[in-house]
Length: 175
Image (cartoon, rainbow, N blue to C red):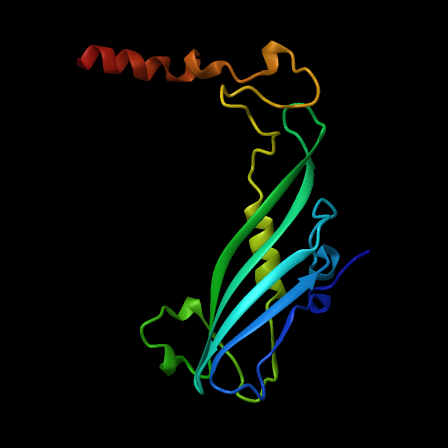
């Protein structure tokens, strides 16, 4: 299913709220916010909004998980993630003098809802590490469910990349 940017939606209603702190708990399916199929767990969002007449500060905590093939053994590995980020909204840029313009989002005073789905999606995509592997034990051995041949394990700590040999020679000459 192809999802358009306009179909993503984690709405937070801002109209009609009094100034002060407000809490929102939202659960979204990964496909609702445009995450790839590997993200197979609901995204749990807890947002705390501090609202004044001129601005909103939204502190967002989220958690979820994804399943990817392990980079070592190719068996599925669940990678949970959780984290926090903040969003700053202002009615006009002058109310956010001490912040960089890039950190501020200007909203229309008549706008009843803000949508944080793109921010949640971006955070979720960046929360998954580049190296997706099963956990290692205290000795650094992989806990993959299949046996990994020794030549495929990362034992290159004492190997020197041949491209660095010329630099190593220069270093030895200067010392």
